[in-house]
Length: 223
Length: 57
Image (cartoon, rainbow over all chains, first blue to last red; front, side, top):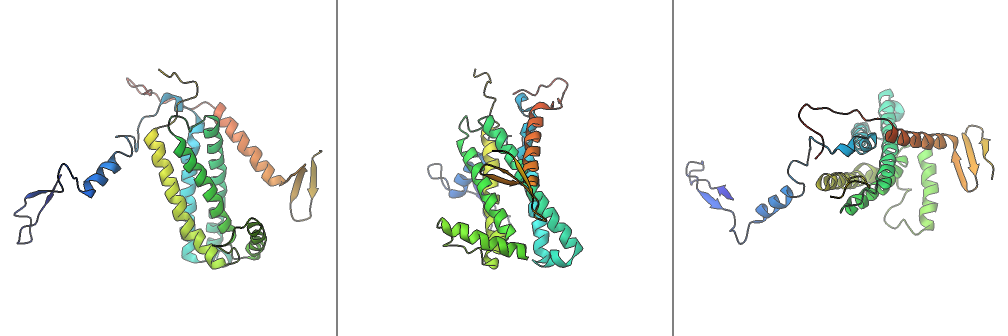
């Protein structure tokens, strides 16, 4: 691959092709570009066709979960604009807070139905074990994220939950790195740390699904 | 082990079944999820027909 070189005058008048690295030692950018383009087969990142066996509503719950997650994130961003007291003093804030809660409820319901479908169709087959494992990580991480959300309601209910949670966590030896009675930490974990982690896990999960394709039915013809 | 529905004034109704102690609301949500799952498997999916092109790969 080549890169253009500026002429001494600063414009591109004297462009000459300078190979980036050699055939024996490609540059790291060439290497990285090749790796990225080979993650998903060509045309599979956003396919316009699907196998005939996907003609079932059970295959819709993955993308429904993703849609709910997007609503969760957008409503959460709006809540962050108003701050932790906003939903107590504003009707609009109260509404956005409700959208955030109910989109989370939908997110979990849809994700669990997606989990049931993938379990019963043994979707880890055909080299898709990591897809399943990362999905499980997304599920567990989402629960932790939701818990920090419950702690961030800035009301007496949240304070009660923190008081109960500390006992449960301490009883199994958890709590060295975080303190559920620290609302500042719990809020920042909820709006920054955990959404970034969940977002990364979700992106990885979707990329793997596109990379390996949708698993064929258990009784599909193997020929 | 019989079902017991408790009205706990203001705190909502709970169902006790052995070690399971769950709110009636939560139980209803789980039942609805199971129903949606069953419907997803049963309800026919609209077929997308294209002239001269099949959906199979």
